[in-house]
Length: 88
Image: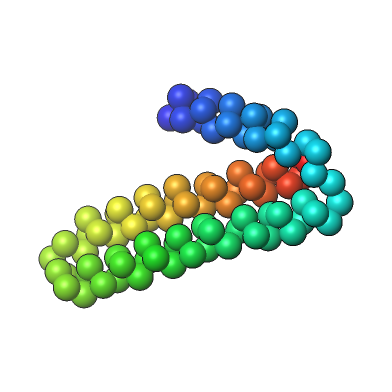
């Protein structure tokens, strides 16, 4: 887990250096556009998971676990963008 956090911190630091030139409302617009991707991704993950649970109810526990992992990883992208907005 510590390795994952170290990688995320390194990526956030590199992205913050790249986004250092973005200022003012342009940063807010950029974050707003960047939040659309994870929103669409979470919708696709949840929709397909519900469809899989409807087709095979006996596998619902495993599908639900994988769905929550997918949501967590997708939401991490939005949170990294949110942090970069404040760092920029």
